Length: 193
Image (cartoon, rainbow, N blue to C red; front, side, top):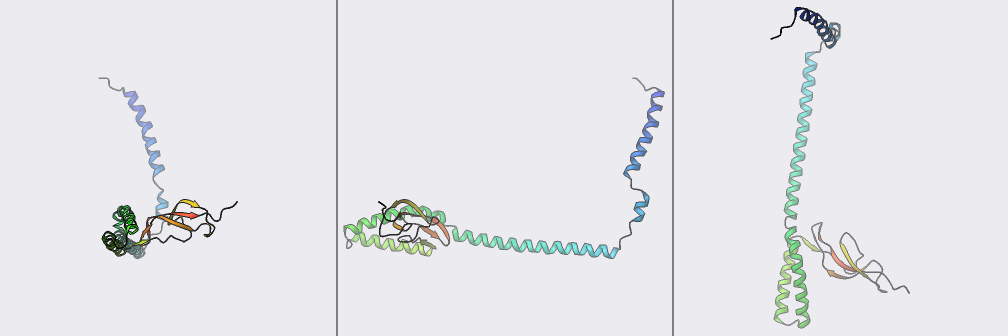
């Protein structure tokens, strides 16, 4: 083992001590600065602490109230719109049923098939109404891109431009939310020669 020589040990120790002392003097605040700060009144400190905790309690209470209101609103919205996906899946079936009903009507309105299908159609319409579903009125109305889906335009001298001529597929809303836009044919106005 190699031991340090006494000369090396003596040289490093004196140099290290002043450097450490300088670092301590730089970090420590002067004693005069500590004494200059006025002593805080314990009553003032306690009053400030109480006010801080009161403010925190008020804010926490407000956040809890907002959370409760938001949760109740989200739960209500979930109940109202819970069946939306089921209803969207039902609409193509209703479209096909309406086509069958029109075919039965064209054959004979007095046939038992037409009368039976009419009763089922009434029940389906009652079910939709009770579920909060509304059919979008489109025939003869101005085109609204928020409610209608234009599949084509037709020139028509009798109907103003931008007015719906025919509905090719019914549209539906659940309360105030659009479930399916109505597919429509829109008038492009009179033919310009």
